[in-house]
Image 1 (spheres, rainbow, N blue to C red):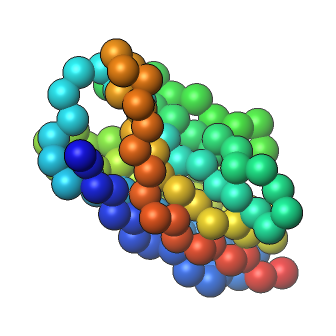
Image 2: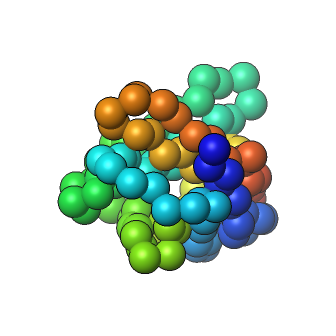
Image 3: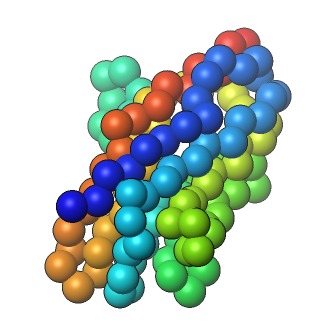
Length: 117
């Protein structure tokens, strides 16, 4: 089992920045994709950004140019740097890791991000 612990959420004004972190409880072996998802009230959970072992990234169109995902494999940790935040970015953000071979997902507990206008 792998536990994921997220930190870094909070309340910020529009135009501000936040950095989310997700730490895994142990090393993850094999091909995997680390990602961030979000779920706003009344909406489905959506992918925000993802990064592979090799560093290939993928972003939702709504966050391109504002958010940056990165990973530190030595620390079993990945990050989401969020700049130029907008009220529509308000959501609970979940970190995720998908093990490619098994297609198994691990999820964090979620952290609230609130952007005030």
